Length: 369
Ligand code: MRU
Image: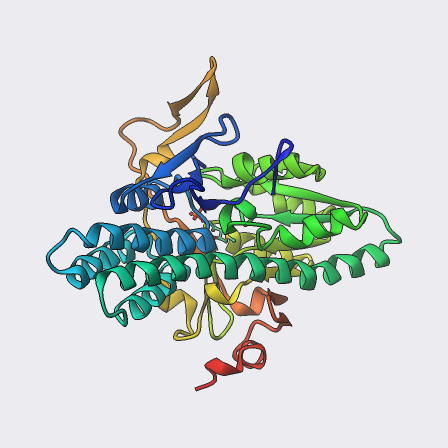
């Protein structure tokens, strides 16, 4: 997607040296655009843990490349497979909610362990990481096409007046390698000349909406307004939101959706105001093995300092300031679960379906076991 006049994806291999993976440092956006190089498994793991990159599909892709980097290191190790299995475990302990990470690591390990020698295993690791990444780009493109129809319909009902879409967190191209999930239909609608406007939830505590989604919208020329997290309900009551589209970190077979903390409250407000609440759900984020999201999805608990401090741009540099009394304890739940009954529909790469087992399995029959 566009950054100024250039095109970027969220992760790529260095063209001159394929032993280096490159990413945009999302901790510095929107104030500084910096590319960082991941040369070791440790670099990649740190980037995931510290959220230099984030967003479920991008975490999946990065986990794939992290295993590839580990495979390069494993060649200098006595036991290649043991080295890799240890790194796979470390990755799985990094960010527990996004299922994409677990799927990518398992896909890598299943493929690599079939290799007959170290060199072949490294080749498989690179091929698999590239495939995970290429696939998610294609998936997002298709989510865009299916979601576009929903925006088109609302636009027609409004006689071409602006369609107001509310989104939470960043489910944009930064979070998914390219296009985004929740944003893909918006970018397509904009491209087709449909009038859209996006309400961007700031998304405390890390402000992925205010810093990342707003930056993406600005670069793509999409009209948008950043709002404090608690504003959505008020806007909905006053007819200023036509639809909500959010992403997902893990959706269960029954259609419960884990997404960034605060999503559930938006879904409740949308229900109360009769506003459609859509979840852009790539199949990579669907956990076909679980049903009850509240009981079964592990919710990441992060450093309380992310709540107590806020980061911004001051005097020409990025700075952090303390918000709460220093001695007050804080809790930092990364995600919440929106029950399926509050989700109007899931927008997947294979089409739009009801957020329930029947709807999901109709589109993904291969998981009907
Ligand atoms: O903690 P983050 O920034 O990784 O959380 C990201 C989200 O919750 C996104 O909405 C989700 O991963 C979907 S991204 C297409």
